Amino acid sequence: MKRLSAALALLAAAGTSQAAQLDIQITNLTRGSYFTPFLVAAHPGDVNLFSSGSPASASLQAMAEGGDISALVADISAVNASVVENPAAGLLAPGASAFASINTDGAPDNTHLSVVAMILPSNDGFAGLNAREIPTEPGTYIWNVNAYDAGTEGNDEVIGSGAPGEPGYPAPPPVAASSGTGGTGIDASAEGFVHIHRNVLGDDNPTGGNSDIVNSVHRWLNPVIRVVVTVSD
Amino acid sequence: MKQLLFLSSMLLLTACGSNNNDNPAPVAPPAPPPEVTNAGFEVSIVNLTAAQPLSPVTVFIHNVELQLFAIGESASAELEVLAEAGDNSQLLDSVDASAEASGSAPLGPGASESLSLELDGDDTSGLRLTLLTMLVNTNDAFTGINAVDISALEVGQSMTLNGRSYDAGTEANTEAADSIPGPAGGGEGFNAVRDDIADQVTGHGGAVTLDDGLSGSALNHTHRWDNPVAQFRITRTQ
Image 1 (tube, each protein chain N blue to C red):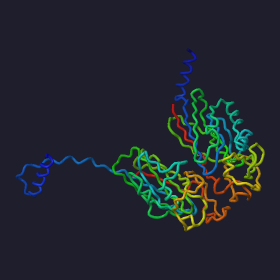
Image 2: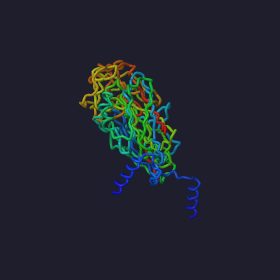
Image 3: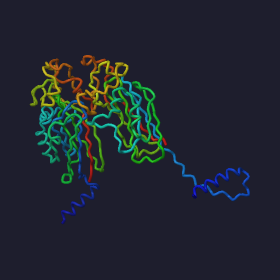
Image 4: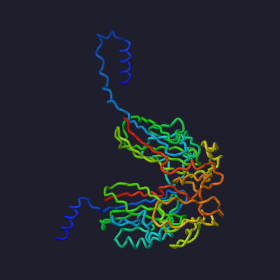
């Protein structure tokens, strides 16, 4: 009983409870790029999956180079985040949307939202909503999200590996279908820090040139995804 | 019958002219309805691009049900004509709007203009505003405002919005002169064939241009752009 009243007093002191139901829609705004499985997480405000201008973590690198979110999930789960993995059940196609729901009733410290996924085709490009504070007032909020370069791999723009530290980009079927082949590779090296992506270059040669990315199909302009969050009590 | 009687007494009164001192006093006319000031809005547009004229800007104020485009959805035939040719006549003809306005000429790079719209009455509940205009030195790029809620704007209040570029998804982005209606191409505008990579509206990836490696492009580096491509300001004026 004592405990209960203490809890009630805490709630009263806090004024409004942070607990909320979040219904999240993620839309791929690009013309011809896909996103690998998304990680959607509500987490404490002092945690970031990445920081612009700083080197990427190994976990972020695995996501940005190959779409593997397992290490990021482990990292963020260690701080008791509320996590949704892979809401699109695979690749999110151009123009398509994925939906995720998070309830933070049992986790009032999870006040910030992060959403990340790799862009394909790209060497280490990703869309990143980075620890955005979740409004406490019920309503619908629209956030436009930019593309970042993880800075961990040179942007050679040829089909290759999704393993961290190996060159090239992975090309699952729809990405392979829209890519070229036979590119000799752009001479590029890892930048060393997370930054806003300068966009893919691509070329118009389907069987050669220096890039397997197609310039009239795969280029994007920011924002590359739209996150619509509906907050309710 | 009652109405007929009323009418005939009106006629009688009229016939009597001003010499009516001996006639019974006319029935007091019904009180005039309280004066209503029609709600009015001004929409100003700034073209933020370097070398992409915007086709005559089209603005609709409409009800909450209408949405003229959506990411991932196929463009309507009317939107296709606007996005490929800069021709808004089909949209103006087909959209059932509470108020509409159209610019009289293309809006050049760096240029701005204001359009005024007046509603019939002062009820703004549920009202949305949509604006559409083509980037004319492209195959099928457009920008605009997509059904933004203006119902809560008070007189004198305004909101500022940035317009990103969209691809209508109705024409392949060859950038060839014969497929670009603007001054950089001088070619064909509308073509009913839908040959883009997918028949859906998406964000635009920007112009590639000949300078950046697209063979056959009639565009050069000046025709490139970044988002936002236009800035909009909606003001409730009355």
